[in-house]
Image 1 (tube, rainbow, N blue to C red):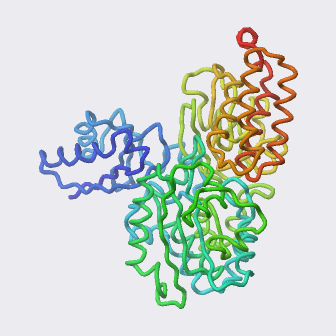
Image 2: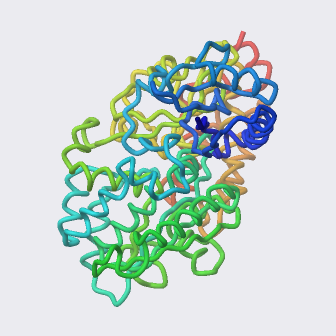
Image 3: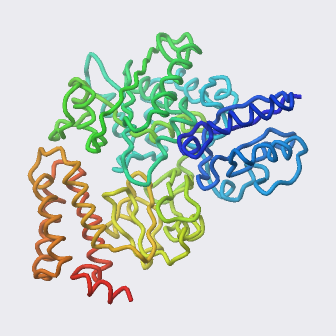
Length: 518
């Protein structure tokens, strides 16, 4: 009998020894003359347990983790005997951290072989595209609109409206662009889905192409994601071989092709117009809007630009219906959000859940508090440009409007947790410094404001005319918020102003901050 073992090829597992584990299991099997099949799946998102190794049994896949080279012999014994082991986690699907989730987008991630179209189809893949091939563009867009799906890249703009705008714009050619330039600190959902389930992104983009009349798409991936680049290129090639991509998809009249483009390390290229400039071979500078990319985007043609997770949500909507997706969530935030827990957290990883769960539940119940065991002092939601929330705001439901009411952003769904040793004036300074380094330099509020912001915070921290310089910092933040061309300069004030508002004791000369901490 062949023993089927799953070892992740996800970067989070590879960086802690997953590739070496493959060699170790193969060596052990060779010594024992044991017949094994190793499947390189994606990660299930329980990152504190990586590398998490699974074995197929009659009861389901049994997980072990985190597994090291020294554990391989004993883990293999436990797999063969279906017996106990210190690292045995039980049936993977029954692990409480996974059972609490509502996995619509990530339902196959960590389950399927990300290089196999047949495996993807066996787990419900391409049903959405098969249905889309029988519909007209207006019908597809109506489903996406009714689902309530909003952009998962951070802005939360209704996806159906964007697609309809492109569909209604007359042009000889249109494009689909996937923004996979995931650069926010503490975020890894785009990488995980591309490495663990690339076909869901390819399927979503293909459906978008059919809906708006586009025949060409580009996936713009940050250069720091070589595993994702490899996975998407392999996925595109496999989809073409299977007839799900290319000319006359599955014998239909629809054609759609995809190409991966790799960025050059600029954070600002996560902004859609900078991304388009980079795709066209130019330096990533923000474009003034209007015209909107939906009217005049890539190469001057109408362009749908969506985030990886937005496209990945589309196959479920087309397969199960708009209502099935819209039934999850709250208010205007429908469906699920893949939330990434990072920073000083006990249980870090990806947790997909319907909108409406509170920030406190995510941090305390799901994340388990801090890794250090110290009290949580602050959490930053929405990447390096997101606001810092104190414990007093942990009752905030995870919802676009609820966060906006409290001067916060959901962004890309990243939550970075800090314990009580954090100095919030340093965090505010970092936000300004980050903006100064990453600014494309096109607009004055962002280019100059961020540099002046660093200088002003330094003055505050050294005790120089603290009250007056705090007033300058607030004024500077307002100028950046309302005067910047894009979200890089426009959102930098969120972490700065939230740190000032909720942690005022950290702003002032060092002795004062230390006394406040004591």
